[in-house]
Amino acid sequence: MFQQAGRGYDMAITQFSPEGRLFQVEYAIEAVRRGTTAIVCKNKNSVVFAVEKKSIELQEIKLGSEKIFKIDDHIGVAIAGLTADARVLIDRARVQAQINLLNYDEKISVKDITLNICEYKQAFTQNAGVRPFGVSFLIGGIDTDGTTALFLTDPSGAMWGYKAFAIGSGANEARTFLEEHYDENMNDEELKLLPLRALKELMGDKLNENTCDMAFILQEDRTFRLLNLEEKKEYLQKF
Image (cartoon, rainbow, N blue to C red; front, side, top):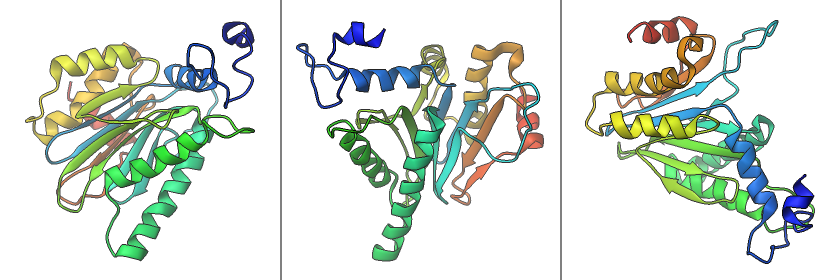
């Protein structure tokens, strides 16, 4: 199927089509589009992460999340796409964060860690014998000067800054909801509910404490915290 679409130009990552396209990068972006929905929002003080979580019969529910990760105390990431690919990049980002702390005696900024991830992703779009990472990140956090930041990365290695954004299979509907309801002057309590309300629009009655994950980085402690089942249930009852 793919070979017909690319007419043979998708056989190697280093080969451009006559239209100037890299088909393997586009296939990786398609893997992101088919992933579970991830939403991240920020105001002037805090950052909130929320993701759709697939609920499978007989699957054991454990602590932690497969779609939201901590990079450093002040930085978190929500992903859409291939989780295995994401783990490789996140492990590398965690090491880079500690290298920055050891070398410069200061925590790495959200922008710098995003650039580091993007440069590594881009290298996998131009070398033979490899494939692009089939995952996109929404990287959010609070820098040492107290400013919040949110960046999107995609499989090509490109990055963009946002105030609120969504990726994954329900991204278009979620972005429309965010465009209508987001206000950069909203308080932290309103910010915490916004991505959950966006997920509610997508998932309807399927949204519960077992079908979503949620995390905060708040100005009061600037520390990444993943919510447990009881905390998620409490917030879901507020709307």
